[in-house]
Length: 355
Image 1 (tube, rainbow, N blue to C red):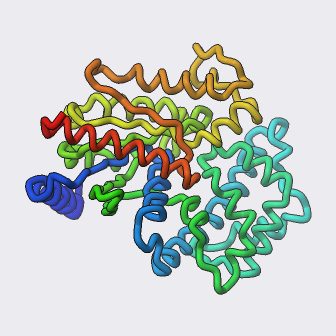
Image 2 (image 1 turned 180 degrees about the vertical axis):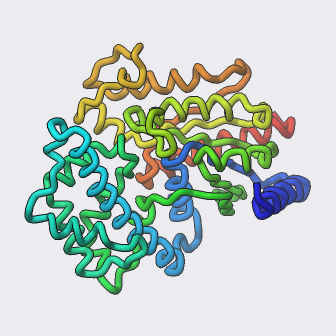
């Protein structure tokens, strides 16, 4: 750990302690979960729903650079990984070959700097590539290549994004993917209850920095991705993301820091799960060989995954509240957050001896 992490932890530690004595009315929620489970998307949704002003124009401009970066970086990845797969196994992956009409665009985009702006010329080449069957076929393999699902939204909208007057919409902001590093904190007033919500980095190397800071939180919201059952880790491509998520849930749910903390599990990305399970027919027993459910009934798969999570809880006294969620759907987040509020307030009353 470097000094700034030490200092940051110390500050967060002090901040939580002083808040604790100063104002017990504040409900502290910790959003946890692995990288790309969607927890930061929840965080952004709450900002849109419950902040007086939502995202300012300055916020939107900051996201603009992240969107430009995601478009270029991920299209470069599609080009390069497609080429590598063809080289390794030409018979199996010949359908990933980029067609003659898109070759110039592939060369152009490959040479772009990652921090280039999306102007009209760049947008033309991105659109050309996105219309190419080889690129589309490579995108179908995105779970194995750690390419975010939301890229299709940005590739489709690249002409709008290249407009000099473009400012990201709420939907663009919800869908842009950026690794959370360190700790982000927001304050919300929801129906007269003060909430402090902390979003922390989900990658492996981020975890040890923050876990001890939060023993006084009211509730932990663990966000897991239902659709990760066929995806591999960014840090280690031999590990399925869902297995890693289950292990992380196990560590956090049974951690001594969170023994008496209310625990809420969001099984997120249900829309993407249903698409994979029912329409793309990607079998769940690739991840769990004991699954015997009906491949046409996504709820059977979802409930099976939920059971796998709940089985990791070693404390029979500890109730885990679960919700199937879709963080990009505003109404879904708003309804679920109302339920969360009830749980959090009940828990605070219990802890305070008022129930």
